[in-house]
Image (tube, rainbow, N blue to C red):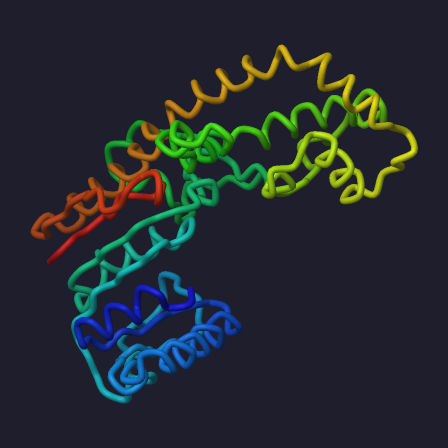
Amino acid sequence: GRGYLGVKISYDYERNVLGIESCEATVHSSEQRIELLSKYQKDLCDNTKYKATSTIVDSETNFQKLFYQTFNFHSSSFLLCSLHACGSLSCSLLYHFVKNSSVQAIANVACCYHLLEEKYIANPFTNYYNETDPCSFPLSHRLIEEKTKLGRNARMLAVQSFERNKADQTLNAGLWYRALMQVILIEIYGLTTNLQDIKLGKLTKRSLTFEEYVWKALNKLKLDKTKITSNVINNYWIRYESYHRQLHTFIQLKVLFSGLIEMMILLDRLVFLQESVPTASSYLVALFDPIKSPRRWCLISLK
């Protein structure tokens, strides 16, 4: 990322911090951010020991080499810290903690569970499946023995936040608009196949009315707007308004299971660490307010 956490740790605790980011443009952006901050906090650039490098972290990444190339001196003890490590990146960091004696500690806040590669289920986009390939779930012997599988729908649900949905009831407006828009696409535009592939994005971000949403969606999909009028759109709203509460209730019931699935993924990782490095002290710690940060759990392990 742009080094928010790395700069903070480096400046406050006077630690050498190496920020690893796969995108060179993001690394450049992080450097610009530090320069900008230094205008308001003049000693930041002089005192920070944060540096960034562009590379992809995988099972072959040599952190000692990267550190030496960046700071020009050797270190044999590392803490791997990630906020938020997307998809399989979290698991790559866990593997390094287990296999690399120089990695003495890990603090991992994960995200994007829908991008994980499962051991016992085919990738829905490639239909590829091989039990012998490295995977992100399951990791623990217990779940491997039971050939536990989740599936993409369950992993998509794991990234939802019950607490945030409960606090902000407007979050489901986009789903209601999208569902009603799909009826229009079927009945007026005759789209009956591959509807799941239609991507509309966050069109409801600025509190649009449903009519505004429809016009924006038609523009994005490049469909003929002369086939529909404001009156027709309003009639669809009236016709299906009674289903709004049913959809809302269904979504709330689904989100009730989000924490359960997320915890299954995280406990699998915790048990994996306990199995692989039994002498280490490993914990799951609730660090953040779940309304402000739905990914509140941090997996911590110390050798």
